[in-house]
Image 1: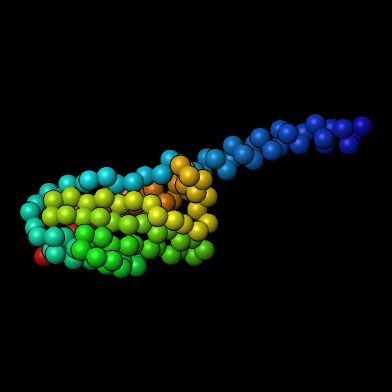
Image 2: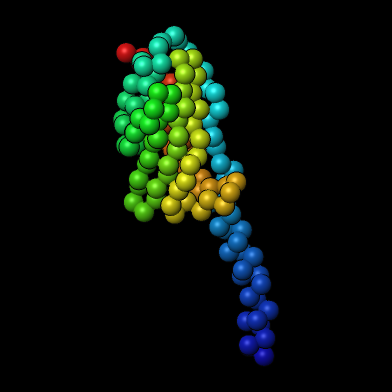
Length: 128
């Protein structure tokens, strides 16, 4: 009788676990064509983005004019993004990750917080 109770409870326990895990993920947040508030050259924008990311612990790698690859490593988690930019706007897009439960559309909620922080830091970084 006790075995039947355990077998009957298994689907319920699996459902609870699935709901618990899904609570940790959110739809992925990409920044699309976010406008800068002031005017500057693309070179100044590049430096503004590099300083903002480095200040938050991101590894910033200029790939070519208008494109920076940004990588954040926190404990066992890795997030890789590409930042495209012009003199007037920038975008931050997901590239890949490790240990962030990415499933094609959703990712661990911390990722979105990291991207929002990076976006805010870029906007607040003075264009010197």
